[in-house]
Image 1: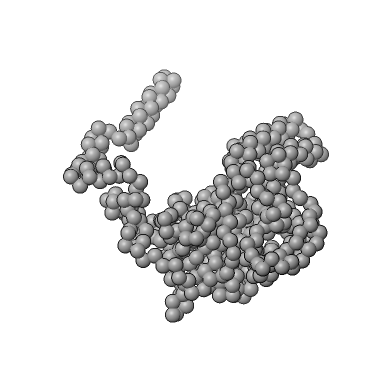
Image 2 (image 1 turned 60 degrees about the horizontal axis):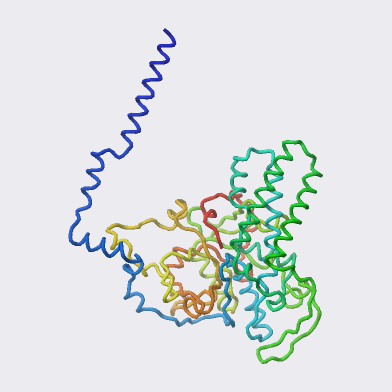
Length: 466
């Protein structure tokens, strides 16, 4: 009798579940109601013909807005030359270098000058490999499908990054001029070698976990990591060349006159011509309306170097960030800037403006999420880093538009730069790295607080490729 009752209950639950699924699915009756919303009018047919045969941005471009295009800026930091990251995700490195090279160009009256991205990128990849392997070792006793291990396997290594990568790598390895260690094909086209290194590191992760199952001692893991990194080092040398350790170099000004000529190491070159402690000089600011402002935050594991710094920032209202940025530009100092560059971008003009395209009118709907809602749903986040170098101010010192130096080559955008309207800045700007001397003391004091630790899989940072 009891077995029959259990069977009866099981059948009832099955039928109930099946009925629930049918109720939740698109039934013929529901489909009929949905289809009634499309009237197939003459206007609908014309729109369907236009949309199916053309890029949507071409149909919704606001031509009147494009005609208002203005390239004047009341305040602009001087620099020379536009860099090009080619087919790589190294915008974070190009942006950091642009900040430092603009200071060096101004200090020594240089012509076009740049640091070697290839040199530092080699160490970025080696350090990221070590970071991954060490974190795998640290989490080896957890299930492979734990949140930490799941995140690790999805974020093994890549060419993206952020400013702590610049500060930690430069302070550890120094810099060299671009002519001393030029780019290679693979440093400008990073996808293939990055995928191969990723594949190898995932293989190593399973080997580490097998060592854990076999109850290997810590010494085994330490030795195994060195062995694994030796293979990664060889792969990097074959793709990018071995990093230079010593070189002779003559620095010349814009007129060709020699300023200095000596033998350098990468560290001594940096110390001689830049010399500042990047970790102590700069502060990262964020505009994230999904979290309380005037608070300090830190992202776990979000660093390039295992013995370096996690990404730490102060979350501020957008108006506070603007005031700090204006102070820096007025003092001829560029800043590391990151944003959601793909939104409302007019490539022909190099213009970022929320009024560039009217998608709603074409499609007969609205797109009404605000910045906070876009963040928490993953609809928007920082996707690209550039160098903030100009602002156009009105008579009351308020920003009308902004200028960023990009790293997509001189022919992209407006003479290699992008113009950003202030309204777009409000909606899609996320991070700014600025010299502490431009930040009010009341804000700097927030650095003394204990930061709120956020996981690396937080929606605000899952978007990151800059």
